Image (cartoon, rainbow, N blue to C red):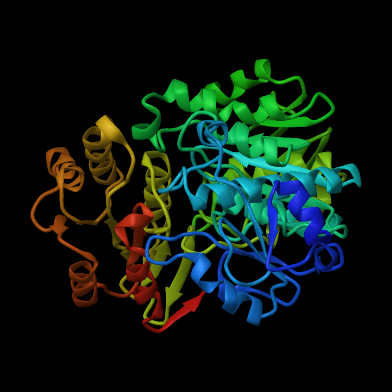
Amino acid sequence: MIALTLAQIAEIVGGELADISPVEAAEVRVTGTVEFDSRAVTPGGLFLALPGARSDGHDFAAGAIASGAVAVLAARPVGVPAIVVPAASEADTASGALEHDDAAGSGAAVLAALAKLAAAVAAELAAGGLRIIGVTGSSGKTSTKDLLAAVLAPLGAVVAPPGSFNNELGHPWTVLRATTDTDFLILEMSARHPGNIAALAAIATPSIGVVLNVGTAHLGEFGSREIIAATKSELPQAVPAAGVVVLNADDSAVAAMADKTAARVVRVSRGPGADVWSSDETLDELARPRFTLHAGGESVPITLAVHGEHQVSNALCAAAVALECGASVAQVADALAGAGAVSARRMQVSTRADGVTIINDAYNANPDSMAAGLKALAWMARETVGATGHKRRSWAVLGEMGELGDDAISEHDRIGRFAVRLDVSRLIVVGTGRPVNAMLQGAVMEGSWGSEAVLVPDADAALDLLRAELAEGDVVLVKASNAAGLGALADLLVEQGSQQR
């Protein structure tokens, strides 16, 4: 972040100095990074003392100072130089900015202070020319964020969150990664409740907002798709009139958000009639899309390095942003061609030495992304393999999709049926409980028989089955919500003599 003295930070966050004199605080500057993990502290940094499920960051304050931090942002004195912040107000908690197990305690207090610090830094950097890009959607946020980072990199210095740092902690943490040398700050914005995106946008107001889609992720939290749409629309509403909002016109709920923003609207579509659109779409043998990009009267062929036809919409949104930021159509095509998967366990495709292809998409799942993953799996298995020229077998190793509320049973049933309709060779449903049982029964009722669809209790059982039965040319999709823990299973499958293609 920009260099600030401890006295300046204390004033910004409304904190009191502890174990350091006002004279010293006016001289000591934070010149390093802001960290919530004491092991990541760098010289000149600021350590956030946050309580966790099994430990309290306040207990690691002295160690953070020993590692080079100049101070701690804390909710109570910790015996080393600190800025101590008051308990979070009811207004902070009710606003949706804070979601923590101890919302009225020290965690909320430090998170509220972190948000204030990030807001001050973002405002100063934006006044100096920083362009802030916010991305939201029910699915595809992380993939699009990675594509955005790739297409903007030729235009200047980019800061983007690692993985899915998109909540009340990861969002301001990412903002504070930006410095006076940063040209573009990309922020992924997630929500579990109405008001969350508005609160994140208030920390760092985007000059460009991107809305990808409105699906059923977190349906159990929101209650309806209409409420999800209203929450996603908080991003275009936050973009000022001088800004730009990029909308996926292929999603009617997203397209309708054009009426909710004062900013200029740029529409993207996988068909003519939009400002940025695609045609001539095809997929290669590993489901990597090829298409023609049309924008500003120009057309250029593009080959993506990421997998799945759903990536076309993500790429169009990234292209629209880059064009708004000054890139040429040719620059966009070149950047997208070299933009492979960056964030772990998101449509990572590896082919092992024995010819087995693993699609590791185990970081998260909702009905829309699950369907997209299954489509990619089915496409890759269309090819023949080996001297016999037999069709590749497809394996879908699927776990529970979380946070679907009353729709959990019906949505899991639908995915089981969809796998059968796509002619997936083998379905391994992993886990226990009603939702995964519904996925299996959906497959059975749709026509799966014998060992084509099985239910196993855990990842170890799934791994044993796969090790025993995988053969040359098989394609395996591993996907579930992160809580299902299938990421380690996918990693183990890849590690068995894999080589990246």
